[in-house]
Image (cartoon, rainbow, N blue to C red; front, top):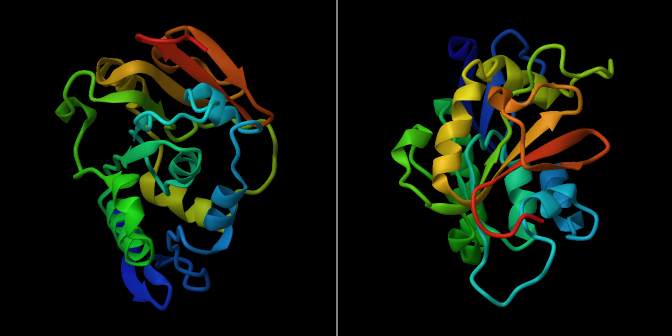
Length: 224
């Protein structure tokens, strides 16, 4: 429920505060420091399942692979994809999260202007607004359906706040068709290990990691 939250400036940048939990530190997206920055620094093509899923297993001198992160959220996976060599466009429809991303990107650009061409934020819009064959890869990571996680580990506080704001992606199945239209090479869907296929559509193949899986829907181009 958006009315339960507020955006406010903090020393670290624009933050999201939760009225019901004033003791919680405001949620700030930060590509320059903290866990998100560290995660990106540690990313490598050899060990990342997301690299194999998104065709980023080999370095190339050609134009970087273009990826639309169609459900950007806090852009944690997007930041890894950028560090692996992709050019990523973020699409986020939740207005408050969109503002958090815009603020984080501006701080990133101020320190590292070269990222202006590597990581961009699309205007708030639906996938239907994108033209056919706009990106090499469309990446989907809809909010996990209830009951998809079998482990009982507590959700981290920042993700707890994010999940309460965004809620469940009840229309997740409806994202696949436009994503397939937009992607030149493939659509990659991040899913919990035991969840159903998106839109009940069997993928071309999968990349499995310890915590989740990547369902791959090949449109054109290479299949591995």
